[in-house]
Image (cartoon, rainbow over all chains, first blue to last red):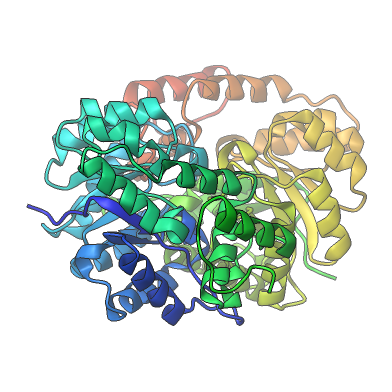
Length: 307
Length: 307
């Protein structure tokens, strides 16, 4: 049987860039250790929140090694490896599997749209065949509103039937409740990770036990506590604070805003840096965001956003 | 001043893969020479029709060199170089510019959607800065229905103002007449290449003199003759045949169908091969397509599609 990701809160790590534009491996590892200490069961290297598409395959391989060296265990690590071309996808996937990572997050090849499902099935088959390692654990990465293409329920069922030991789970970032509930009820044994932590109270009774959520970069403890309450059969106490954080985030570009808040938490202003096509949030918006996170979300920051 | 693409018909080359899945450089060069002999003024390596996203950066560098070695001059060659990450985009762009290619087709970074125009401007600025070669000639590649993101008229104006010697043209594959006519009338000096040859009769009076069209893979001579008639001030004689070819193509996935027809023309059945997420057209559909190309489009094939 394959390795598999944890339940609980998994943080899709933001990716820090230093002043010369290079991925800052030290800050990356520090951030990963922080969220683990703050309640996360695992981390994702190079999901959408990690500006994965803006980081070259070469840099991604190096950064995954750096995370491991910083003390993140392979079992705590999921790696986004889906690219448009098979050669690059295989290189990234092999590297993650050979490192023993808990799983890989696989985007569909996302340039072409309206492609046949047979073609996507064949794509996954070639990934599995090309990696050729019994340890592979694929989490389909479903984020159609960004990728422009997703994994349909029919295709998921076919992939599960065809590759029951390899296609073990899905990260559902569609933000669509019907999709998430169908995944929970129609695909027995599929390890479903909710892309929005706010859906956990509703998804929990259906068996959903884990979430990979961008918000975990700034409030993993709250989300972990919420899941802890659900585990204990209690009404989650943290729902309102999480909702307030979501509300503060809602008017802003998510990645730059989360990075601004991370700069405020760490005192490392390099964190505000994003790669194009993103732009940093203006300092005024960032400062207001951090203020709302403190006031309405009850988060504490070591350094104010406006400093 | 920069190098610049030709007017007339430029063929966005299909990309052949041999039985072992490898890019077939010999067949690629042969096809490029065929379309040049058949009336094209130039070729594009790795546009959408060339399954660019499915070909790794490594393979793309090799294939561009192979095209040059097959006798395609740098002046005849445009290269698609836009990727999601800057490092890869710079590598592909530098390579094309240093080879003296007539231009590069630059997709916007296409994973993230609804990104700020400032971020896209910054992206182009970094490409120009990173390549740092006065010969660079950027053709913005506008194909929002596939890429999920495009170049707005406002952004094009800003880029032209900011980089008048570098951002020289655009390939408009939107298929939208308003977009194309605005490009012709609102951006003096911009070299506009129409993405649909069928729009040429209407665009010609506005000053449009060139087209990059997937159909050129199978009927470049017809399109070249159409433009020749327009140059001569005559009613283009080939419009009906071109329309018939477009009609035959309309119900089919374009790339697999064009490849099927190319297999029929060359007798090289390797040409039917596509990479996932595409699938080859079923032989029956392909044979019917070829039949319609002959019957309604007046094209001649050395080998029947059903052989």
